[in-house]
Length: 106
Image (cartoon, rainbow, N blue to C red; front, side, top):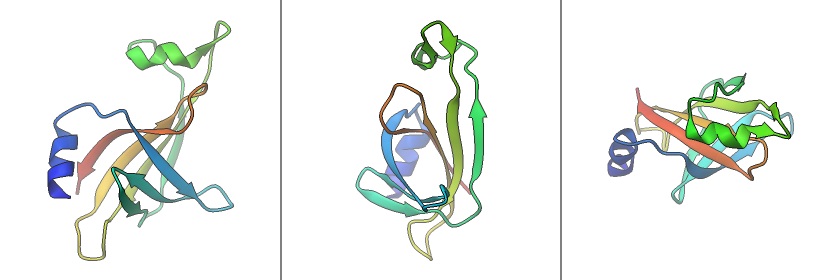
């Protein structure tokens, strides 16, 4: 598991992940590379408008209009004795599912 996190911190990810939510829309856990990462702290939600500098921004323009990208910063922990990590995930309109943007250790 530590090797996956070290590898993730060395490159841009943009890897598909599955985010599980409560019925109220609060993230519960992230499944990434076969590992389930429970959310252990209050998630931070934001909506971004792409500025066009990221190559992935091309997907955020639909019919000439810029659409918003939903983002979450999630503190997760693989087990009660493992270190905390912060995951940034985003969902762009026109794409199915969520992408993991980055992983950082606390």
